[in-house]
Image (tube, rainbow, N blue to C red; front, side, top):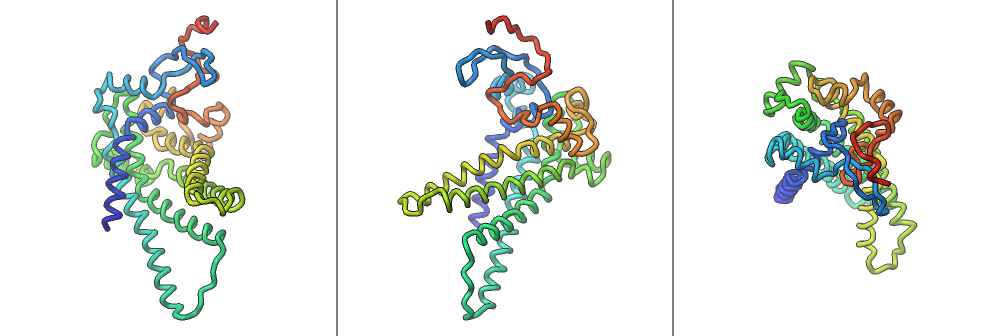
Length: 303
């Protein structure tokens, strides 16, 4: 019980600290660019015309809504995080209790030792079920969080309070409105999890020497690296899910010119892929000007 409470408190703290970052990320994902490009330098030191990064974007929001405005959408996001942590823990606890019952029921019968790969499959499957259950239950709060952020674009006040937002979505879109963008989000989580654990297993089994004294430490590093790699590959699912959550919801940020009206998440995926915008919002610091966009940037300064 104490362990679950500590996880909730830690998760809530990280959520509060990361709220301004997510706020900026979501606005960039829907294509909102209120600031013109500036002359900067890329990682090679060459002068380029690039879009403002995280801090400039956050300053722009704070100049309009104040520093408190950077935490718009925090309440439903906290609810989502707390509820998700509880559900995730309950599902894993259920599997652990089932294992205990199975072990006690087998009595003195010697249990066959499973291979390491079988254990990875078993643990990953259970983690997938726990994450999927948490995502399914908390997705309505995720939708409210995104919409309360995106309404900054049109200066609307449609999704302000948590209860009012629930009533508004149910009245205008019904139950399905709470699960807009759920499918690509679930697919992204599942693919990322299996990709991460599979790559970590291959690296730990075939690439690392088991005789090394820092083996456990190396394995933890490999898990972090493969997790980062998997999240990069599955980022398009995150982008599509967020766009579908605000698509045609009555907000300026979910309609043209910031975002086209998509018929389905597959239509959204195909259109983003065609435009070359599958990584939009993935980087918050070195942001290059998208191809085909027109901005007031004096390129003569680059010569």
